[in-house]
Image 1 (cartoon, rainbow, N blue to C red):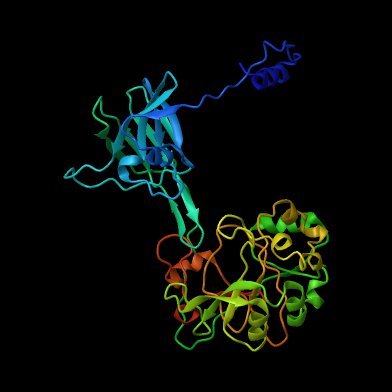
Image 2 (image 1 turned 60 degrees about the vertical axis):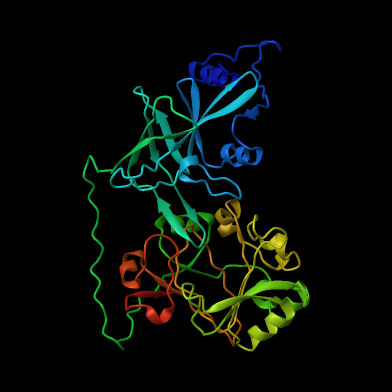
Length: 394
């Protein structure tokens, strides 16, 4: 029993934590193992070094299930491997392929990330859950439960048998049917449902809005000098006219993520800001200045000269305590494509009088009207939207 377990037990029973001598205290030791067998050194790295995998004991071996490897896409034959360890050596004994030629209907390929796996008494392995969200590409969740029948013995590459069971509700759940959508005739004005405009007095006021899960416009917040000071000339002076930024340069006012009617252009910030002031079809979504492919964008790190101008008021302390990313966005006369964010977000907008911004929100119950395909961040240009009930925010 580890020291933590002893402490938890002592707290639960009212006993004092036992006094242990230095020699009695538990220790954890790590030993580097040498990978042996018919596996090249570079292959062993991505076969064994994975993110989101599960590892479980299976007889005299241990099984590695799923996960994703760096700079390598795991094939069907590498998603599940069996290994053994002894005498300071690790051997990849078998790779379990789930592709059986001519075996009838194929098993839907799961995404083995964030799943749970358990070894059953009969030697099979049951995998439950799993899935992930990839920014801009969508969300995928495994449907059903997967059972892996592990073949006895076999060579290095053994054909395993996967069984896929669809999930069912044991206890029927009453779900509220979405409100029927009445399509509008062409040319008929969209029906507008106002979004409530609220003033926050305390952090609890904002917490209630978050718990309600409904859109709201927050008025009267003290966001610092940025509201009045952030003119184009001021931004150029603080950011630097010669700083390089990557922007979307669109062909039309309505950007289309599917048709890609825009291109990514590297521009100096001064030139970009001047073109925005002229109403050009440009959009900047700032990335991390230090490591754009690895780190989230954070205003204080990426634009330190601008950061002091922007403050989060006390009413939004929940945001400050859970902040992951703060992104600087600027745009000219261009419309963002229709999309949805997979995480909660707070949009703080300051508009130039010549470039007033507007925000249209649509209820998730209307997603069928927007011709979303599959899961995730499926996007459409505004000209293809069917009539529904948009909610204007600004």
